[in-house]
Each structure stands twice: as C-alpha cells, then as structure tokens.
Length: 99
Image (tube, rainbow, N blue to C red; front, side, top):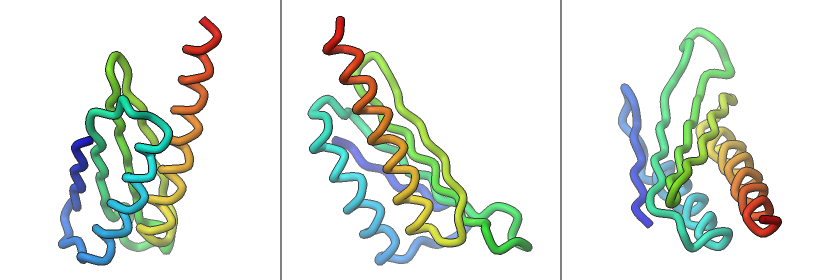
C-alpha cells in the first residue's frame, strides 16, 4: 500500500503526518486490495474556526473511494474522513459478496 500525504500551502508537522499514517494503515485491516492512499490536507477560509479540510482518496482495483471532511482540527478531519472511507469499503465488500 502506497501512502502519500500532501499538505497544501503549509508545512506539515511530523506529529500530524504520523497521525495520518497511523489512521491510514488501519484501513489495510479492512481490505488487502488497497493499492494507494492519498491524503490531502488544506486550510479553507482561514477567517473561520472550522477550516481544516482532509480529503482522502483510496484506490483499489477497479474502484476508488473518496471522502472529504472539514472540522476545526486536522486530526479530527482525518478521523472523520477515515470513518467515511471505512463505511464505503465495508459497503463495497458486502455488495461484492451478494453477487
């Protein structure tokens, strides 16, 4: 699994990068087919309090999962987006089993 973390228009701290890596690696428990994971972190509308956005794109053979969440911290955004991706993967696997 190839993990890429992109900090858009800011320098990412090693602590934030470690948090993102830790959460993304847990996705491997749900599916062995994950080819790559891209995490995009950016600040939107700097004047508001809720302005930290995390977009996560997970590529598996023949499909792609995507989630974007905006909260008041990058860690919270990453956690919320990972939860959404997990739900998508579970739903996708259930769909495959029913066929």
